[in-house]
Length: 92
Image (cartoon, rainbow, N blue to C red; front, side):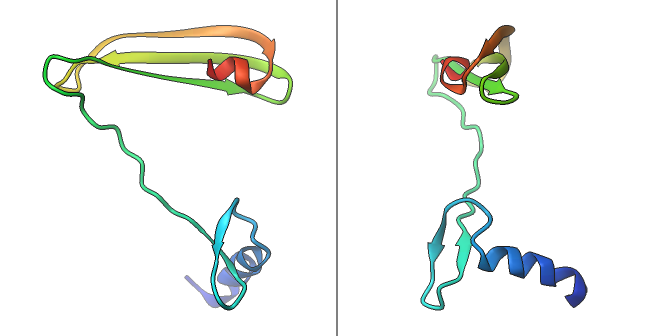
């Protein structure tokens, strides 16, 4: 990437703009990057994954989820409109 394109990124990093980061001796905050992936369940088990979303607080909310078997195959899923609420209710 060209240096003039990187300057705004580094300025943003120095202000600690990417959520919580770790402090390094120089005092610059860097984001903590952790890869996230779905892992299969144990043999003869199913896995239920759910998530919720709120557009603003409070705001329109929805949630959904799915069930997968031990091979990672989709078994069933759901999605629903919760209405106007906060993030805690959407995640439950």
